[in-house]
Length: 128
Length: 414
Image (cartoon, rainbow over all chains, first blue to last red; front, side):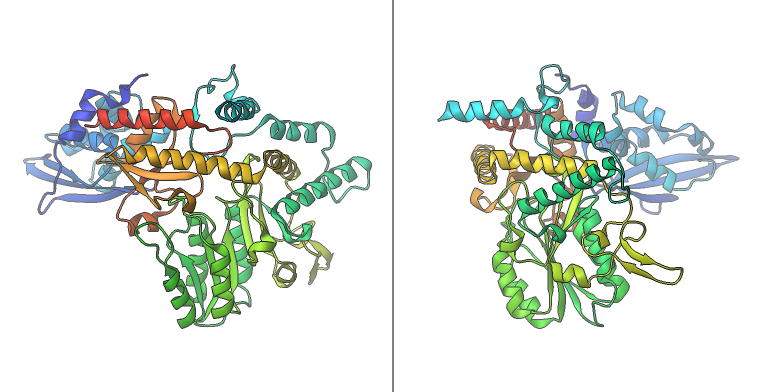
């Protein structure tokens, strides 16, 4: 038996999610859903322009889902806060896998990458 | 009594290569039978035998091997039609229930409905019933009426009757047994009400969760259409059936066109073959029919009443065990006699995917999600559920392992 997928980190984030909630007047927002289980995730991002840089100052998510989708949402929102939006191009599934730190099987990719899909749906320039 | 029962199950399991000693899955507690069943060696061998000794394009060749393939295909149809209690020509082979349902929806889109008529379904329908009929209703501007279920997951028959009385319904579709709630609908009663209140309606029965699990007679149920899939009842994937009354099939337009379904063809006109070939365009899935016929043999050797009793016993035991687990909330009736061989449930605060994942770590395969029934889940105010579904090779030890597994789920997420 191994409970690797449900590492202490993931269970802790399931109990106490980070960045869960809404941002009033976000610069970007989006919805994403997982057709396999009907889970829905909303993502809110606030950016600030300082000189020639546009920096993510706040990122929050809302919605219900499994422990994996909730943990990846907590981890990715935490990761992007403070990034310049030009740095978003480095964010991909490999990064999400690394943040989660557990093996993700093909059938759980939708759960793990739901937050990534939401980020893509924000259509932030410089992020493809 | 206990010993003989155990022996009977052990014998059954040894027929399934996936559970054999040299299989990587020998210890798997497989409880996702409502999605698809495992296959006994008899079914697998029947397909190998067909390709080894009878393979040719049926119907077309005049040579002996093609004749043999035709005969094998024909005898498979005869066997399966006998099993479902219809005439051989009333059984159309399809890719599966979804294909059957899309076919019916396509054929009924032509010259069947009048303006402002309605299609009546239940909220417990699988997407394979709901979506084709929803699309049909939208394209022909028909009303789509939905019968609800009560908090116990039992169909509201009074509302069913009321909707039939107050609308011009032309097509009625309902499931024999819900793939989420497990509820077995009183088909005969529903048919009786329909024939009285809406005599011009056609009745379509989704028998995906009843055929192969309990005795089902097309003739006795007296519906107009019945659909089921082969892969859920020990047969191969890619074969299923649309069963319909002869007089209806003769009038109904084909839903698929091409070779083998025609009588004569000119550049401007085609006359169609007689039933069932009118509905089976192209080279048929002979190996699928052969495999399904073999599955039917296998099921009949056990006996459908015995399968029903076996599943009912496991469901009753599971319900009793679940009663002691205060973190489990079941969907559907609490009385096992109202159910088929599956139970959907939720674990307090834990998402169904997480339940399934932790169980998987313990070698227990269940289903998680909305089970292709999103409207039903919405109506019950749950986003998803976990589902355990039994079949012939499951036994009491599988129930114990499930219960122990769920205790672990609750512990991990407490």
